[in-house]
Length: 54
Image (cartoon, rainbow, N blue to C red):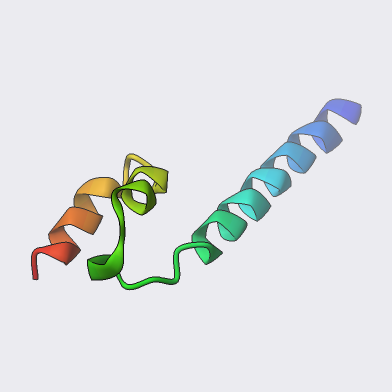
């Protein structure tokens, strides 16, 4: 029972930190600096580059 609570707590914390991190990037992609780009999750970086080239 304690392990189950710990796992759900960790998953909840992960979602909260992801949501908070996403809220930090409200700037349009074409206004990002190199620092903004590097702060994005590596899985999303190719998508961000594709959006920038439009």
